[in-house]
Amino acid sequence: MLTTRSVPARESLDFWHDAVLANLVGMDIATESSTYDATMRTDHLGDLQITTVECDPGHVHRAPRFIARGDGRHVFVALQSTGRAQVEQDGRTTELRAGDIAFFETIRPFHTTFPERFRLRIFAVPRHLLHRPESDLEQLTARALRPVDGDGLSTLLGPMMERLADTSEAYATPVAERLAEGVIDLMAAAAADRLSADPAELPSADRVLLQRIRTFVRWNLPDPGLTPRLIADEHGISVRYLHRLFETEGTTLCKWIRELRLHECRRELTARAPGSVSLGQIARRWGFTTPSQFSKAFRGSFGLSPTDWLQAERARRAEGEAP
Image (tube, rainbow, N blue to C red):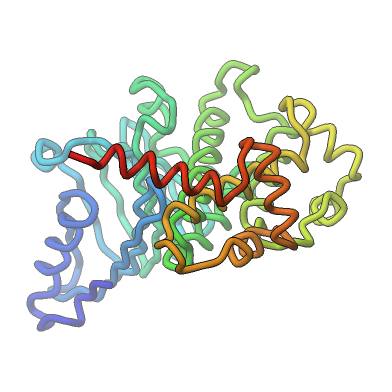
């Protein structure tokens, strides 16, 4: 957490310039006052850097002279949490209101005015994970994704960004990476939708619903009571329709959940120091009700018991590390 209150008031704006340059990108920041009240919190979730800023009114300008300093690896996907913003980039202008989402390109200039105190959630996304060429990204900037317009994706994405920004420190690495994958997938889908991509690529109502279900499952993966009935009821659909959604993906819901749980168990088994945690503890942590249920599922997927697999994996790693 960085705050301008940690320095004398007369140094607050210079302090904030340096903080933004170090954690986001370089830009000019101007205010009506000679002092500035602002805070910044930066966390990491998988491939995402999540920065929350809460600031006084002001103007920011990412001028060309700053861009030479950056490597341009990230695109910013920002959620206007409170307040308003007038955004200009690539020849377009839009106003962001609370709940709106916008894409910012970091390798081209932009100008943003915040007429009132605001809170902004900024997700720095590796550009290659959006699966869009530069020509497409240029068409995304300064266009608000607005939940009140009935945009199903932004209605789902906004609350998820808000929650992840507030709770990103709470997740162990395997869970964090899974959640990051899910939110990046939603951002890529929102980008495709905004660009009116090829109809085959657009997220239909079923695709949006499936993404919501996948996200719900990932959030609740440790819950042994995560049944098809519970998932269907949570999303207002029948169990039969739920199963049909996964049939279109060439799998079944139960198989997909089991594979997710086994994947997390394997990751935790290899990450933990030998003897620091039992197989039963790991199994229960990821939704298996008994060690025998876990062992049976594990052997069915990988052909070995968890113990034999872990011994073989440690031997393989030790051999790879030997000089």
